Length: 239
Image (cartoon, rainbow, N blue to C red; front, side, top):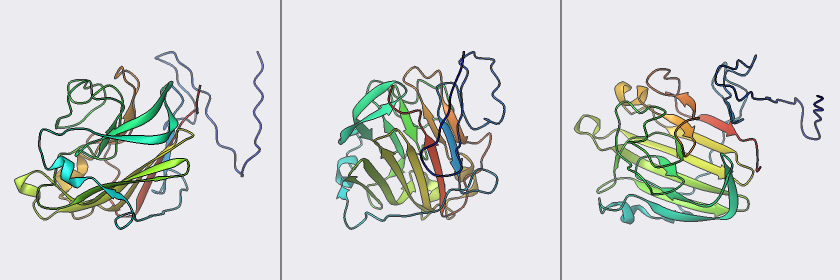
């Protein structure tokens, strides 16, 4: 067979050709996985992304009140476009109080310490996780979203983890989903969170079957611990 790769965009061209065999090794693609997602960051050694923060605290739709009722787990957000995610086309995502977006509401959403790929008893079928911790929104913090052309920005503003050991420790971060399937995590302020909880920060995406996830940071490889950090998952695009 023959494969031709061309570049009509910016230099340099970065690409991955994934192999689907479970034991496949793809040289130079440590931050990629079987389906074809890859990730990079502005952290040293993980790429050359540029930090950018687009604050929506004054312009976004504030849905914090929804989560003040503990029975409310998922807030549906119609994206306004079809978002390709592991071979599906999602026209809506569900916002949670955990720093996690989900593809549906079939299944639990609860704290799992530590969070990990493959735990189908902790998350619904298909998710995008920028933090994975239950945030106490009864007194402090906000959750907002803003629809823009070709993307939606979800913002967790000054949220505190629901834990007596973390009172007063706030985090502000965003999840951005784009029409081409790309996903970006932006961490504006996380350094005030204690080291134990920060080491458990779970930045990952996983398919509905909980069989093919891609992990950027977790307790087994905790690398996201600084303010002004951005992580971008690049998708293979719509099928």
